[in-house]
Amino acid sequence: MHQSKWRIIHNSQGYTLLEALFSLVVFVLLSQILLLVMFWIKQMDTTFFTEEHLQWELFVQDFQDSFSNVKEVRVSNQSNTLEVFYMKPDESIKIDRSGDVLRLTINHEGNIPWLIGIESALFSWDGQFIKISVIFQNGIEKERRFFVQTNTE
Image (cartoon, rainbow, N blue to C red):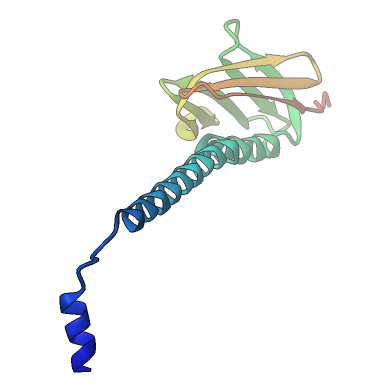
């Protein structure tokens, strides 16, 4: 044991230039791999569902659920308000945009935020289909058509 300490203390070779270059190459390769992984994760984050995609799909589900026993559908002249009247005389909903929120009003009372963070929303009605086009604040555009069977009884 005494000789191994003596060898370490009196070793005059030290850390060579070749060892330093090898360490530098390994460090550069690992940093490049880390950068590639970070860019890949960033791309996957924007490729898969973002918050807007999830909000949109939840909104679409709720929106579709509101089309049973419909008597009449009206869209405003500017195409930014949709009103749905039901078979029961006092039941109706109104969907319009206020600021960056698409809101729902039931029976002319209250405002329920339905879709948040939108820049614009347009509705159209052709007698059978309601079409909604939404542009989110980050530029994502979504559009969907819904079949609505109206009862004229």
